[in-house]
Amino acid sequence: MAGLATAFGSGAMTNSIGEIEHAEVLLVIGSNTTENHPVIGAAIRRAVLHHGAKLIVADPREIGLTQDAALWLRQRPGTDLALINGLIQVILENGWQNQEYIDQHTENFEALAQTVKSYPPQRVAEITGVPAEKIVEAARLYAQAGRAGIYYAMGITQHHNGTDNVKALANLALVCGHLGKPSSGVNPLRGQNNVQGACDLGALPGDLTGYQKVADLLSRQRFAQAWGVDSLPDTPGLTVTEMMDAALAGSLKAMLIMGENPALSDPDSNHVRQALRRMDLLVVMDIFLTETAQLADVVLPTACWAEKDGTFTNTERRVQRVRKAVPPPGQAKPDWWVLTELGKRLGQDWNYRTPQQIFEELRRLTPSYAGITYRRLERLGGLQWPCPDTRHPGTPILHVGGCARGKGLFSPVEHQEPAEPIDSDYPLVLTTGRLLYHYHTGSMTRRVEGLNQLAAQCLVEINPADARELGVSDGARVQVSSRRGEVTAQAWVTDRVPAGVVFMPFHFAESAANLLTNKALDPDCKIPELKVCAVRLKAA
Image (cartoon, rainbow, N blue to C red; front, side, top):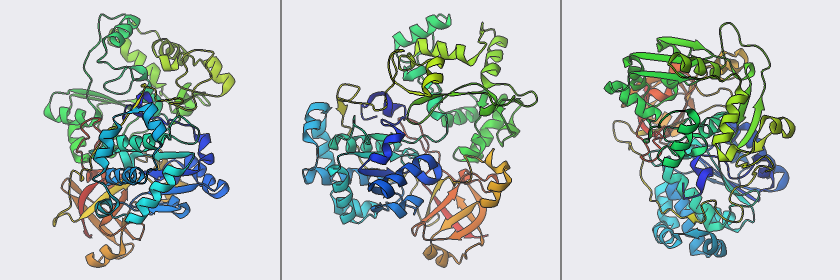
């Protein structure tokens, strides 16, 4: 994205977590960091409270970090791109850009400069609801800092224009030259503990390991030779959302789901459940009988993280060893063993005996992992890719001395309104997210009594002005409806959300927020617009 090679394309941090505390300015956008990434959230707070960093938070909701922020930019949901373009416009208008960096290390700057001319602070204020003077001050703080980092999460990506949102953030960093140096960069925060590792190892429909594209002939030939086959497919597969459409259409007949609960986590959940029921064969590998597993023809019990060996790769690209602490219960097996046995039964000559053997194959085929070995991980505690050979120390900071692609490509992008606008029938905007006390669809955390005492049920956050107009009192049961379904939950009347916006966490199967959300897709990366949809609310 924005031409910054593997780091942005894979959604990995350009910099390291340990650098956060030494930043001068931190821009957090689309991330409720203290609840969703508490370790990183704590580092951000330490940077502010102990080292004097200036924190800029851009979020429609009042989140924990807003209490520590020098500036809170409360943008209307779905207007992040206009806000970012507005920051760039102010920077260029005032001559705050790093022109030397732009001239030496970027291309297509004139096209970007022309595009952002139409985003002066007053117009951006009208689009986003953020006062113009705050936009100017945020631009000044970020541009004039010596070390400034951007931190974002799914509040940026889970939109129908999420790719453009990320390109806009890359543009902002490039304009100021905040790349390739400590405590700076563009730093996406991954949603789960080994999402980065799964993507690195090819769990994406268009990628082989290390983001080597299936469309690239040389990559396909190298993998085909290593795997002893004549050829590999040259076209990308389907994303999760596309799989559900294909299943409903009857063109996808079987599915194997590993450690995922799309019946609760994917948008328009009624549509997802219909698709799962339509298939001829649904196999689920998981540690609990989730809502998705309950729909399966076959459930294969697998070991959890503490019951198997292997590696995790975290959001800062750090590969770390995981060691089995206890044996898996009952018939549960490590997932690599299950997949190997399935391969054998499908006629493949797969003879993997240990996770280390699989990792060695990964190293041989993946340049960014080539220098990482189990022995080095044991000795060093972790290594950050790219690590091209066994003498390489790993790469804490990407794009040092210039962008990995050669020159950073400015990508002019324009604001788009959310795919589903509000109207008289559905006059409120719903946005969704997570709570500190529960994880994803709650398949693990909602089995913990102590956590359930802290967060026992779904609370719908509603602004007091909306509550008065609708006749809803705090603690009352409310019905939230969209064009795709309706759920019932308890109202929390609070100023945490602005008027016109309601918030729901998606952890609770009995009040499943994703029954309501919109599956409109980003055309580039095919991520659905989970963060904005139109709803109505009434007393239940």
